Image (cartoon, rainbow, N blue to C red; front, side):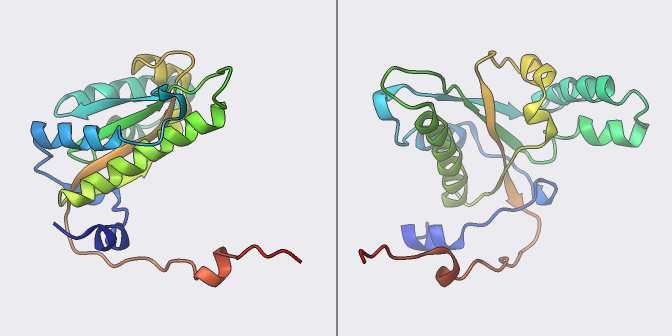
Length: 190
């Protein structure tokens, strides 16, 4: 297992279509979810939850995506429908991070949303630590109410991201990262 700094330094996203099996085991999924749930959570609200899509459930969820896509685009051709059906089947495992942020008398909603984002990032890092690759994405269906209803999300819930997890099909190179001089400043009093 890489040390923590090396782990953070080497993490990168791999496109879902570039991920293969085998998927994480049940014990590994439990580890992933346990780590993902250990994030800052002001007020202990647990303003997020997870939906695990594995095996045939990925295709069943794809049918909900197809139904919403057909409703929006009745003229869609069979190739487009096939792409939509596979949205959650491109990687061996997909875990949705669902934000349950809402009004609270003490905890700002924005902090709750950030906590869901932290859960998604922890999930990505945990996958990397276990030797998998991951891609945290949202696509049109993450914002479509018919899809969200079909996936069991409440009216107050939103998708923070779909984390696709698998093994990379090939070695990949890292993309250029921003120079620190372009993104970091030091505050000074004048």
